[in-house]
Image 1: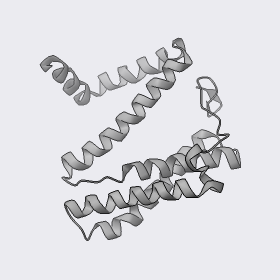
Image 2: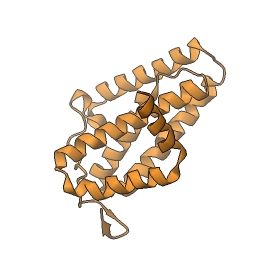
Image 3: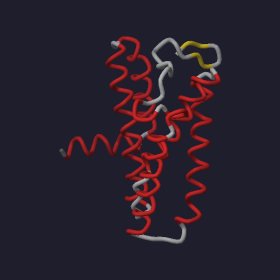
Length: 165
């Protein structure tokens, strides 16, 4: 366990190791099956989710339980932009991040007034309200069945600046 911890600490501290890891992922992804790449993508998304909670609780000392709501805002925004307006994923994701950031900014005003367990309760309430909105607003979100017809991003189908990725 100590060797793993030492390796992970070195990985975080050294940008060259990070660049090597990203390069290995980019070069190795086309050699893997699409299912393996999709599972790896889900693992990386979960890692981002976990790291956001770690950043907030570990460094800031605040407990927030509304992360799923912000992830959901970004996901539904991306899906709606790609499906309804035919935007490319490379344009939809930054716009979704911006919208989720605006939602977080709006939630920050009442969040400034509370601390500790009350912040956790407030953000949990935000997540629950978001879930209910998604569940009940069938015409926009698809309800419990999700947003149908969103094309799945796959390897060699995404084009960034004219280069297939």
